[in-house]
Length: 434
Image (cartoon, rainbow, N blue to C red; front, side, top):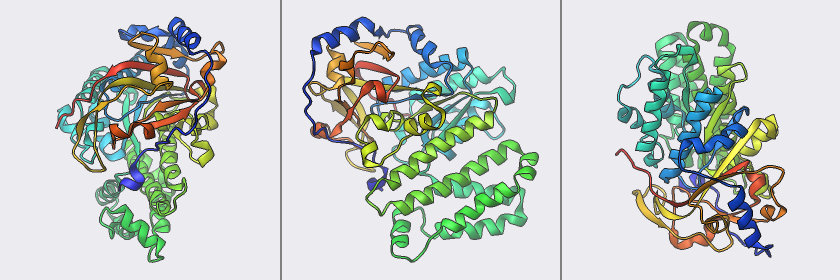
């Protein structure tokens, strides 16, 4: 599944002539906020706290500091600004087990290690790690004296566990509406025949042997047609089952687009990111505020990179386009060097890999030259034009080869891609729980 699960990596092929970098380094040094404790985040929290969505990125899926600083930001947004949920680049079904844990809902596992073991699909280390465990334990404690309807939630926005979502939908109808369960099973038989193999389904569609679009769409239509009844019976259960059905519907679109070499498959996935985040906010109501954790490549506005010219969308662009930039605050992350958890190829065992020093003239190099080991910079109207110059910004996926670094940089206009940027000079790997 490597062909459609990899994140976008764009090779830097341009060699711009930079203005006086020494002046730019001095600007960053003078205007950045050094990071030592969560209280140092005050200017960022102030800038982000009134937005409907705050998107927190990462330059890799295996770096401890990105998770810990995202957790510190999220805690403050929840405690001080009333944010209602965290939505992560993870599977809906596994994340919903975490949601039950943090809200202490019926059927929830009592042990955070047990609940995070629900993330059992490669790359497990993305969410089954100590950094996330510490966060969800805090969320459960924070929720402990709050009414159920006011408890902070934890959700997934990805589509890769579509077959798990099918099981959830069938189980829902088996338990609550057995008179309709047969029709639901019949509808999903189309995808179930491919035994959790998206590529086999995509090939079958390409060959004209099958197309499950109409079948999976009927399940969503059934849930919408009976919405009033189902919501009256069990609002939380209905919300969960509907999102599972939407995951299956969007995943099927994603699979059908896999055969084409264009941006369609990528775009179907990130549209689910956006739609799910919006659905969760609508579920909480009253213009609820939400936090999204995903890779820089997903949260940073695609229009500030070559992605837009390639017809590729992402959640940062889609949310800004729908709600306006004033309602969406995007934080990017980067580093100069360190260690990271990743695999040498799709499905390979995780490894702790060395992250080489940032390439000369990249953003990692530029921020390193300030001499401040950890900092953030909020971009405002006073940002100098020289910071708008296109530079490489390193992006590491779950598959990583440190010996091919040149292919891991995305040409970026930093203040247009993000509203703020967090830099950590030397980073370390996540701490997996398995």
